Length: 181
Image (cartoon, rainbow, N blue to C red):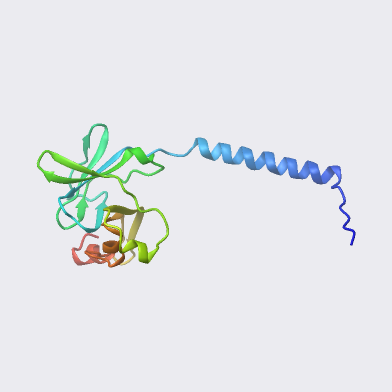
């Protein structure tokens, strides 16, 4: 069997080249405008396991604190920090997003393991490493109450604790139950 290929005509090549150049320019233009988030340090209570959240732009929240040029979010025992600060949007370098457990008043232990891969349940139940999972921003909206509540949420624990939803709670219920909106 003989397969025949035909070369594209000059106009097709020119169209593809133009489209490639236009796409490259668009991607370059977009990459230059990516907003960078400020560095963030999340301080959790010793031995805290489960979901934790920061709710932003809340009038009765804590004022924004800084430590070593990073936003410092001191997460309380209930797992939800209310802050007066606006959410910091944009991309953040991995080394600027840090998590700690406060073992003593002046003693912090950094949690460096991030769970970013797919789930292998069998392996997850054998792994005793403490991980940080998640981190996406979210918005709870209520048309009845005419409010938008911006938050960022994570989980901390071993993979099995995260899979078993140890101390898991959803922020929407927390916001409704505490009448934060």
